[in-house]
Image (cartoon, rainbow, N blue to C red; front, side, top):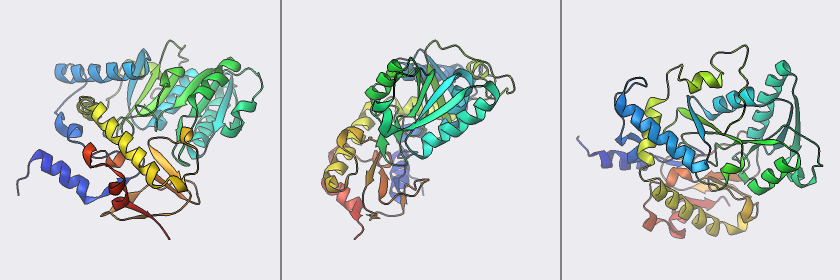
Length: 330
């Protein structure tokens, strides 16, 4: 049976309901601009890539944006290896900040740097000790927590440190990423693209070439020494044509969700990320074939992620629609 392009996308989103941290909904723009492509000498593709990288640079004001074929973890490992030396302070928020610590500790075994970690609850209590880098997850999806970016910037200033952010769950949907000196993120969460690409954005930091790796060299990726994430870039090229529309849908869905479950929120509003919400209770899912978020650590309540619902038209998003999707597990 022949169906239109729009019908294909609509049917795909109806087949399952996504409540995980990413990828987002399947959007028409994700596949609208896909084409046979190659990264060297393909004029049409290179124009699309230039548009995407410039868009991302303007989004956070970082001059340099490097695209990688791989997850945000790859971007983080490359950034930590190529930038971070000396005294590193990890802000402990949960599973993903713990991953940052593990990567940093492995790297520091070979370069003599020192890694320290403190709870995010202790940020205000850190003394004026000097650090070289503050490293943090802006949004920690494992516990549905958003850090206060102003506090991170003040901490970096107070300790004479540079700031590196894991922006995987915050890019595009939270503010003030320009406070960080280096940020790392992927294509498939707040950017609403397909999976397969990650990015490192930075200003004019000194790049410390790794001695024992070719693939983890940032300069190699800057020079496009390996195959790039071509089709993911094209998916972002499509999404960025209508990006603000999808941001508005996410914002409205998030606000309606918080109203419906206002009595079950763990954190106050300023610590609520737009990507996900931690509730103090277990959730029932009412829609067909739900795909819930499964935190990589044990929690007592539920983490519900929102970007899998941005295919819903903005005028249809209200508290009644939220109640069609979820209820508390009595």
